[in-house]
Length: 248
Image (cartoon, rainbow, N blue to C red; front, side, top):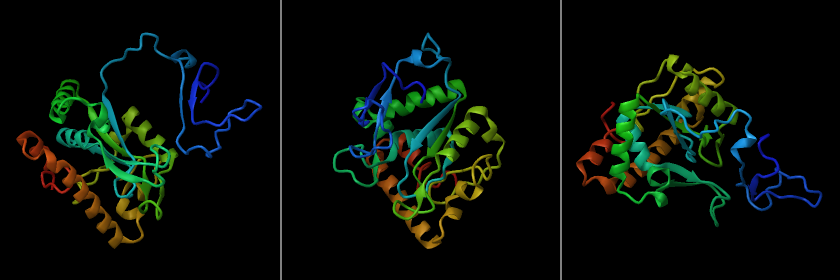
């Protein structure tokens, strides 16, 4: 936050006549953005270069509230979720969106991906295997219920998850077996995160509604990925995603 000062660019932020930014004013939109020069960060790397990533985090805003807050993915799961690009459009991101809407966007940015999805999947697989990278799916969406019933994932918990990934502490956790809906494994415990939140099935009070919602989202994943089934490489990935049996 300290990097947001003169020479920064703010979008959709209200500035009253006295000139002080009012970050609490959501009258224009709930979705605001800011960008700033790298020199606003005291410990920035001036070359703009770094080594290859040992951890990759996919962010998904799950409006259905059934994905775990964090899952460690196998290589083929990583490729499946890269191609799927599941998240939710939230209020303020697009005109007319007033509540979260599930969406699938190839590589989490379909409009900017000119090549066939398989090309990106194969390249990602090569990089994962070459550099020993671990991939995680982090849900920043809802917990304990879908939008309107549950609540938004606590940002403090999300920070604890990301910190656990970066320090490697998360790898010391005991992991669940892949669930029957999404084939995802999640840590049973993690410092700074309520264990009840880590397991979505425990966070929901209405267990029947939880299972019905899992079925609904799982079918949405499968329907979206169905357009790639004519390609044997992609069809194999589908068995590692929701509704598949590879990890059961």
